[in-house]
Length: 262
Length: 295
Image (cartoon, rainbow over all chains, first blue to last red; front, side, top):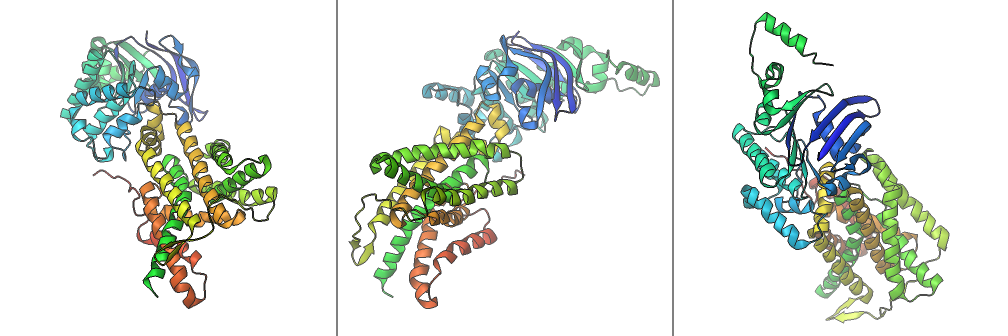
């Protein structure tokens, strides 16, 4: 396994228990989706991997996270990036006052070799031709889709083995969502980068993912291959918008089953 | 009033302005990287002057050795200030951070003269005292050297900000969380900015020390530097260059033209008037970035 979380518990401000006991595995070159409703603990789980809990006064209080055989919890965030983990944060978070080119350069502090940086830059622009067209405008003025591409491209400049994507489709037009997911699939297949994808758009995420975990109220309540998860009637009702039924028995069934296994 | 005099005042003012601007560079560097208003910059410049004098006087070293040593020491001092004080202020309200840096200013203002004695220390850079004539204009050589060195250092700072290291510093000022997510060592970038602020302030302290000697009054450079940083836009180094020239020339002309009419004392008003006017008319300064709001 490339990444494995084992019974991870995350507490914010020493009191608020956001993630209770999450175990997730991402294989070498895998594409794993993490689904769930608002506030279920998806983003927190990603931050526990990238180490970005600290600025938000969160901490992993129990469990282990191993990445490529190393204990991640002992590393600070820049070290984790150097180990091969890049986190694309929710809301894109590009450096608004920098140009796209400068955004990409800012993510290359771990590469000493200039020629190598140049190659990475060309690779990124080849993946996102739209960015090269706008390479000299301030990133804050790019469209939402372009910013998302820039955020992903910027993360790829660190040459990750694992890409953590937090809501890449948030606030994008449907055709852009398709384009972004297409890119994610290509990055995964062509560059062999493993992806752990957090999404509220479960339908789109299950299209690209091989394996999916459903997280609810800080716990993993279900996991399996994308097909299995997709076929589950509860997932369908809760996240895929299927099973529109006003049948009273169905509602009861849903309520009973939403207690999951815990 | 003849043109030669005006020219002389303007040229001297421009040179002096560049020397002020060198103090402001540190304020901008720190603000640009960490968003912290650095009110300790005047006293850091003064401390740099004291450090240079002390290294030369106590270790008996020549100036060309003492100056690099002082620059290195003050680079370390800048990083120390960040490490010991400002790192613990992360997340505090802006007013607290301003108060802390201002507290450092006041502390150094007392501590340095307290340690080394209040008498004015002479710092001799070996610049000839005799003025230079440019037509009928009299130019002080110390200002000429000071202005030239300052301009060179400010240009170097501009080059730095467009290199990868500079891009990283700007990235940190834009979004610290996102900087972490792409492997930038945020704390280190901020510490380096403080170190550079310490070193540039020291250069300014040395230049000013050679002109007026070293005592606590060097720390009053803070006022001019603030005026320049605010006029220039707080986060723009080219802005500092231009604003420095403006403040210097205005001050010099005010001293030469208005002083005889009102009986003196206009020099120190200029900086404060510029601060107030800038904040009223154009709060983000000449080159400051505006907040990007995407529609």
